[in-house]
Image (cartoon, one colour):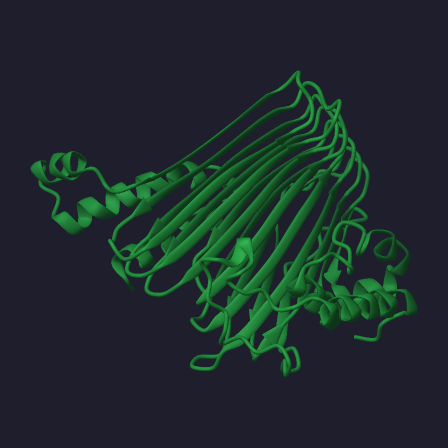
Length: 383
């Protein structure tokens, strides 16, 4: 992708940031549970990733790959790219992502345009590295549904994927955003997603985490206008030696805003998960209503599961609550189902799928709901 001067400047800043920051180790608080010593960043292979987009619906909507967006819609892209996720953020893997950014997708929905057909982006990792960037702009009064999928990865060889997604939902806009990753084993996945929600706007997103040997998801919603709403729902199923890190942030810059978060994980074998969620309320952001919940179901004595809810409150007229649980399947529930004729494995499957269903129920696209259900089913029965 030929980069204009303004994009090359962002890449240069990111390269300098990457060179300045050390590789995280277990001495760092957010990385204590994770072992990424096998990861080598000094010789990262050339990116090899493809993007496939569903057709653009017209009505002034721009939906294209990032190279086309920069070539044909440079003014709009320049206004937003890097404004939600800065190239100089102190994040080693985001800096790597921006410095190597050469693929991605751009969605722009004009004012008051309401799309009834979901749009879809499929990213497929075909080589040893990939660094796609997704930029979404929903203008005032506009509505859209976006489905984002990450798959692929070479079998047998270690590969790295570092992606970024910037979302801007303007006044009165609405975005239903669904994203999942189901990479092949041996992929190290580092993902940063950040949404900015304006006055009376809403984002309703569902995140699925299934594949890769290691994944680090940083997901943030920034509430910037009164009346804004954010609904963040996530589901993860970790097995074997998978390591999942989930770091969420509900950032209320202004008051009279609402955020609701629910992340559910299932762990078995020797899997490791670490959830850390922050609700941050700025000074004088009165009227904030924020809720955060992380629930984990463990199926083995060898798993390691950490959950850490955090409140950073600088206002006093608000409602912020959080909760976290770690537990096992209830034997009495298994007994109840088996007493009614279900074999033990089928009874377990029913209970696991019921545990995760509150997240799946948020998916408003039937085909994607079935995809999530199928991925979970395959994990449960190990196919």
